[in-house]
Image (cartoon, rainbow, N blue to C red; front, side):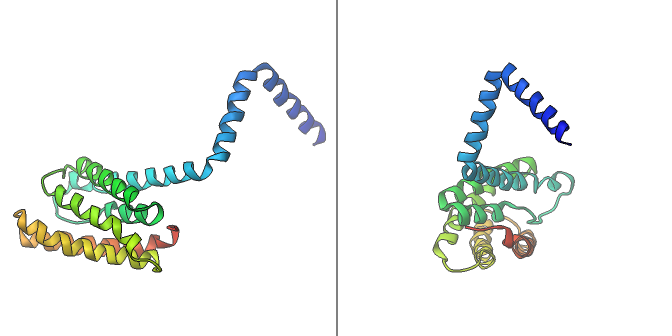
Length: 185
């Protein structure tokens, strides 16, 4: 075992000597990753939230329905909770636009959600001292209360609004119940 380790280390050091520029680049990248680990981790979390949101409405391409099953609100609330309202609003907007685009649902009614996500992005910073689950449920309820009359003003059918808002609330209740433990400030 000792001979194997020494042979392996000799090969590694020979490789480093032969490729000094590449070795320096690798060392610099490793050091930067260590120094900026929390930033890199946060960026990856935001990318994951946007990605989940973006693909969460793909089912609309296959099934014409008015269900509110998506990760957009969750992503907005999570980003606001972890990184502040500005980041939450940007994540919410990007998530909604991508999700509606990929789900063939980008329309004038998307504006309602964009406006409502601005308000929702403030809620995790207004409600302090509560768990992420409580903040998520309050945010979902406020979203539904604001969105319902706006959808009616835009001419949406009441049965479609009820279908969307009830499924949206139930789905977000399930998401916040099951994923709240993974979200921390």
